[in-house]
Length: 339
Image 1 (spheres, rainbow, N blue to C red):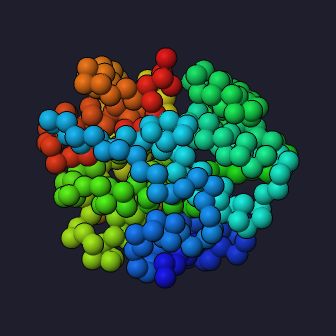
Image 2 (cartoon, rainbow, N blue to C red):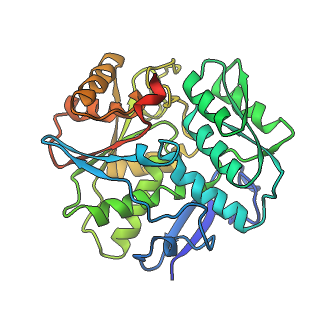
């Protein structure tokens, strides 16, 4: 039987109820899985009985002459964030933490907010998404189409988060819940099931690291079970203008700036210490210039792939570091979000 355990990323204390951070040291929680890998995907998640959306709806892998790509914009709101919101809301619903009519809040640059809004609608919640005043207009409209309110905040990414926390609504900030990033384990499972051979490299758009962390945990679980020989090199790709993880890893003092890759915020991740250990052991963290991102987006369009700049960044890295056909790009956020 698969078992998951939630505990503090710093002191190891177990989460007692639904607290967002450790009551002993104030650090964020992480989630670990142990036990046999199950082909029935839902059986790899022991903290709810039935997901709100089936977990076995695989997104396709496209093979080109130069690379392979996992097309995560095939998810319902056109972003991989649905994977995490599905496991988070399924967990909270199963644990009866949420009731129809509850007023809930979230902070997001756009894609997570759209997914949050959709799942809130599914459960009959009254949602408000807090975002930066400069957030992508199309993503804000998408959030509102699901029936959620939006609040635009002038200030830093932390100011947006604090506004959501202090709104008087039930705060469901996805960055804090390990059940959110744990939903991305299923991407690793799908790659294992869909590909005849594991890729040498997986290039992952990196903002606060939840996607990276979830994919790593999925491969780690497969490795525990002897189903793969090693974990592919996991590349964390950030825009040079918004590269909080890269800067901290390399002791660079640089404030994040707005990037054309607007889904990648450039803040230092909540679980920085945990992520830095994984990156140093299993991957690399690299940055890409604005012009390289724009060129990558335009090239992908010429071969029929329309994703947002924030994931086209992975193709820019493939080209910049001369990686070959043994590489897999995680492409998410349909290009319509950048209109």
